[in-house]
Image 1 (cartoon, rainbow, N blue to C red):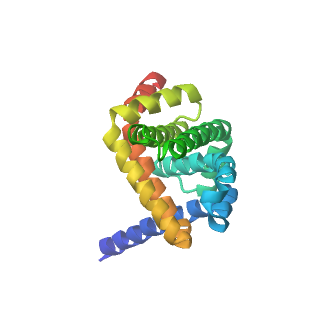
Image 2: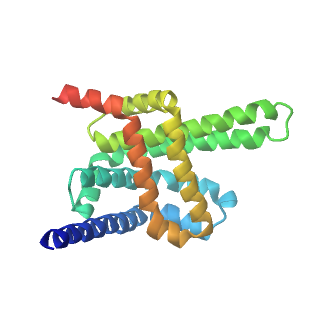
Length: 226
């Protein structure tokens, strides 16, 4: 009976810890990405995309900080707010630069898609531009996770690793992108649920998958550190 009570207590504690991790990370991420979220909720993205392109990089440091929280939690930490702020301080410059690069690349590619739509060469060019857009997002995701896992890594090195592994392990990148796409679709239909409940869960799945994708590079880094 005592053993059953102990197991029950540990199970409740684990469940509470996971729920607290999710809700607290959602709240911190919402605050960090507030300008972008407000624009998405209050404007028509098809009309306000220039503002969204400017606001999107501002949300990038919060994304990397959320990945830092997941990393710390996997190591046994329970100080979510402290871990978030620590990740923010350690990576915000490189995350902001990476977010700016991603925003610029995606804007250029999507503008090109718009320009080629309806033209004779559009049938051949638009699919290639779409693939490049997806690849850019996949590389950026892996790079954000790499920055969270190795806060001292140079952005250039993290980008190189992300580009190599996004292509080499494309099937894993595809899983992460499908999870994020599902989260985006949920946000479009039910913003409150997406922001308040499922954002951290989707990001956790994307982080765990991206971390596994980065294992060859992270293993090398661990070996060199040792």
